[in-house]
Image 1 (cartoon, protein in one colour):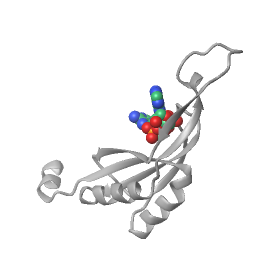
Image 2 (cartoon, protein in one colour):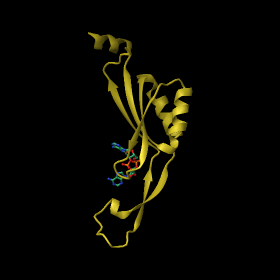
Image 3 (cartoon, rainbow, N blue to C red):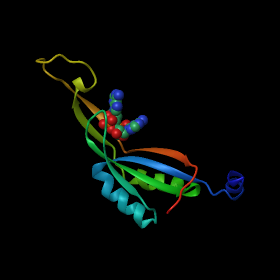
Length: 120
Ligand code: 2BA
């Protein structure tokens, strides 16, 4: 019944998980706040490079999803990073470690449907 009501009024929410480079986190945060969005920031670590990054949690109206994605996108830069090739393969210890270039970012955004949200 509630779902039908929400469908009729189109009052659906999304939860956005936006993983951004920590160097871009301040700009992303302040632009989102200026645009009127509440955010929760979590300090996270990328499992591949083991570098710190920042994950934003945002609960938004369906209709604001693209606006948030655009703000995150326009404030997240792509970066090239040199990492030991051993990050990707099993290189034996004692051998010279060549480096490879990995492109990181701009941002990775997951968009999830929200069933319910309550401020208590
Ligand atoms: P990391 O896991 O540290 O990955 C950093 C960058 O390394 C990635 O950039 C990608 O270019 C490369 N990379 C990651 N895994 C790789 C692999 N198995 N083989 C080759 N290269 C690999 P982005 O794709 O821009 O990701 C930046 C960060 O966003 C990631 O940091 C991770 O924390 C997060 N992320 C990206 N995709 C994700 C996913 N599908 N699920 C969860 N977290 C994700």
